[in-house]
Image (cartoon, rainbow, N blue to C red):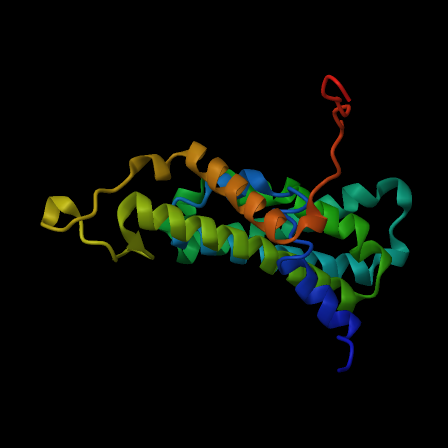
Length: 221
């Protein structure tokens, strides 16, 4: 069996093994705030992925011409320019969802995931690997948002993408929406549950214990 190519590993590792949200705990503010529905989660995921891939490509292309002293400023300007374009497109074609996303599209500019990948990978590698790395991290981020968004919308409103899936009790069905699922604390607990589940399945991702209690001996030993 042939070993996977470096580009394939770069693309797939951020999905689970090196997921930026569940392992590196990056970009969780938007993951908690915009996952009240699948529509907003998908829109935010697509927006961040597009910005991340394009900014990684641009920064990688000009990486040899960026002075170290101003590299962060240049990176932020490039990311902010792309975010403005994406925000304007959303306002023009998806106005209702843009209103629901509020300021979180604009905050992609300062998202730790975007700045982290451009700083640690794109400015040190050629364009193609940089864009593949950005796409993998964007898909890993998107996976978490889609899971959270689907769970919160399904159990909070009985819907998925606006379509009624679970019959509501007030309409003669059996399901009573759990309004707590549409509040921010539920996203926090769901994300914590995902992190716990992933690290239970992959123990190597768990951090080593900071403190090991001393071994006590029973009396008479």
